Image (cartoon, one colour):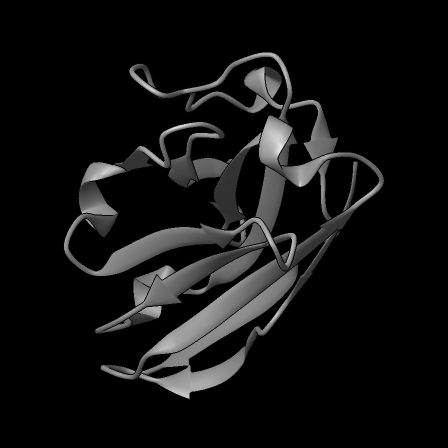
Length: 127
């Protein structure tokens, strides 16, 4: 699976932004998808995931209620809608895919659970 993330940019505190990740190379509906992020000087962290079958969604605690992950299997794309953005949301956002786990009932939040990665898109939230 090849992944291409886009939609990042510079926004202000409180703004909303939607990231997209376009997939190609194999059947998109057969992979679980996720977003991770990496802030300067910090380790990459889990943001959200969506399962491949039921569309179950999972979020890191700090993103619950502000971020929404969704997928459009017809368009081979996963989205991350981010609302009420804060300066601490500034990071490079990566999309990832896994064909090892369906995640319908159990989330996968570790980087090693994902075997396909996009190149990342920078999101900067100014205060």
